Image (cartoon, rainbow, N blue to C red; front, side, top):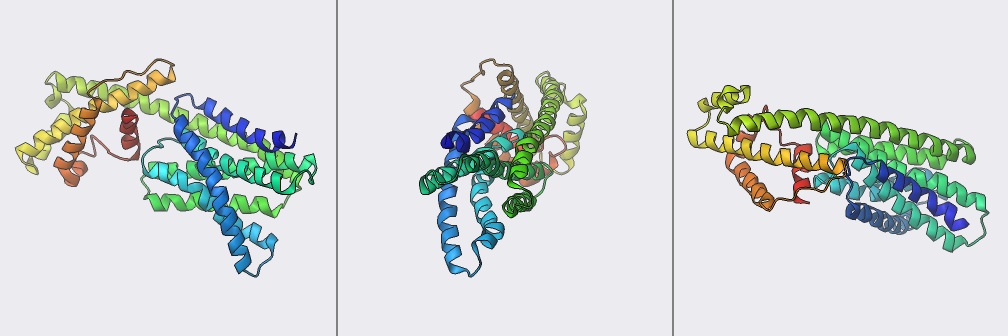
Length: 331
């Protein structure tokens, strides 16, 4: 029973988050990678904390309240930072699931270690508190970091500046948990009740945002690409804007800008189409020329340069979410 209560709650919670991902944004392979990294981060934290504790002249209680949260949260969040920096996470939904998975892996390794180290000495109540309290805290802190980080990036904050609020939030919550300001039973009950509510609100808001993004932007892009294919692009506001750039760019550069818009729209529409197919349980449409189109877009992006990208920002914003969207086609 010890292993059931110390391990099962966090796994069930993670499974629930995965199933709530209605748009199927979460990759099972990346989910497994996050859990694996969580286990590795627990080992890193154990050896790092053991070494730091031997070097410092502070008590174990002080160390666990103030230093352990820093080392443990830092080790857990590295995988989330890596995935976001590589444009593998696009919305709060997948950020939350990947973040919780990393924290879950950490909690599983920690609880298994204590189980072998302590045997059956602690009573069943201790393992219930660790399973429903400590384990969910580890997953929740890393998930909140991921949510805050992706929100900061979507608000066009620099990656490093977006990291700080999430990291501080995770440390403060972790440290507060280790202080035991409340009775352990009350503290565990609050985590078990509040954490699901927080995730439900985050998922609802993120899903609404994603739905609006898909429907509004998809319709606009389809209409714009249709006008380009019918030779009516010049009669659109986007066409007027591109023609106004002739004062600043050569004719060859204008052609490159036009082609860049055309290829981007085609790929963006296909990426959103596949997302909507996944959401509704239909098989994805796999086209053999996708790789060539992505390479063409990459080449055109090099040709227009940073100045061209800046000039096209009113029409095409190649930000984090746009690159993440195109990465879905690679997968």
